[in-house]
Every structure is written in structure tokens, then in C-alpha cells.
Length: 223
Image (tube, rainbow, N blue to C red; front, side, top):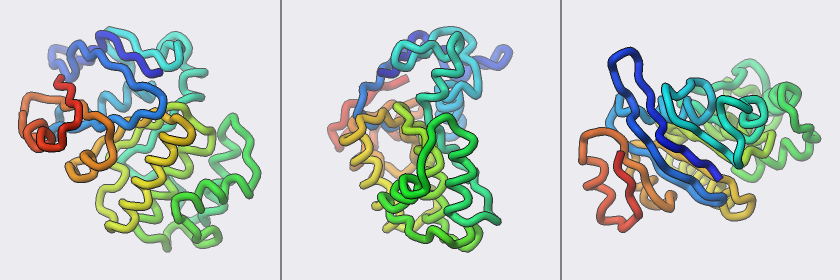
């Protein structure tokens, strides 16, 4: 379980996130929405230990993100909005490269299965030749090599075709159901949030996103 207690983030006198309290259960997909600048990416960065909260605690399966960062990170996968792949390497070479950097050993067959499960079949093609949707799938596949308990996704389907969006969403639903992965998912696509997420956290002062979501009858938490 992910447990966030009284998380606060400020830069000098400017508060970005204030007194956030929430949990995410195994197998749960939680949406994260809000206007630009509301703090969505900051929250994901804190959960990924790329930034420290100014105060408060973040625990994943009882591991404190500040006091036990190494083991906490071993349970966490983070997919930033900007692609983090090697364009000049093939899909296969990207997967093998990032597997070597990690702490979980996988065979080439297992790595290929991760890609195949999300319909990324161009194993021997250079990443630079892939479509936008295929690159997003590769970015996601890399984050799953070490079987994270918590998966943090920052706009993982931005700018891609409907088919790729559907295939990624289907894969995430199966990941949550079958492996009980905890998933936090940011998106400006409210249809995506409504169909994929079990509940939604709205960050920021603008009530616009909450109003859009109310018709979906999804549980909504407002920060």
C-alpha cells in the first residue's frame, strides 16, 4: 500500500502542495487531474523520490521514501511525460540495456513478452523509426522490467493515436488486476480518466476538472 501523510511541498514562500493525505491500495488505478501548474508532476516526482517533500511522510509497503530510498525505489516505476529511450537503439537493445541497469534479472524472452503484452511487436526495429504510440509503449515497458509495485505515469498517452491509447489502457487494467500493481495516472483526457481509473484526485483551485468528472460517479478527492 502507498500511504501519504501530511505531504507538503514549497519552494521558498510558494506552496505547491499542502497537507496531502491519501492511500493507494494494491490493484487500484488512481487518476490525478488538475490545471497546469497545480502540482501533479511535483507530486509524482515526490512519490518517485526525485524530489523530497518539505514535510510529511510517504511510505510504500512500510518503506519510508526518505529513510529507505534505495529499497523504496526498487518497488517504484516512473514514466515521465518526456520520452526516456535511446532513439538509435532497437527495441530489443533498449530493453536489454535498461535490464542491465536494474536489480531484477530478466531473460530476453521475458523482456520481449513485456513488449508483446502491450502490442509492441517491432522488436528489432530502431526506436527512432517507431510511431509515437509505439515509443510510448517502449517507455512504459522499460519502467516495468523490475516488476514495480507502484507505477507512476505522467501523461503516458499524450499525443498518440486512439489504438495505442486503447492498448496501453487495456494493458494497465490487466496489470492492476493480475499483478495488483498500484497505478497513479495523470492525464488531461477526461474520457481516459473516467474509463480507466477507479477514483480520481483533483489538485488545484480550479473546479473545472471535478465538474467534468461528477457525471462519471467516480469517487473524487479534492486537494
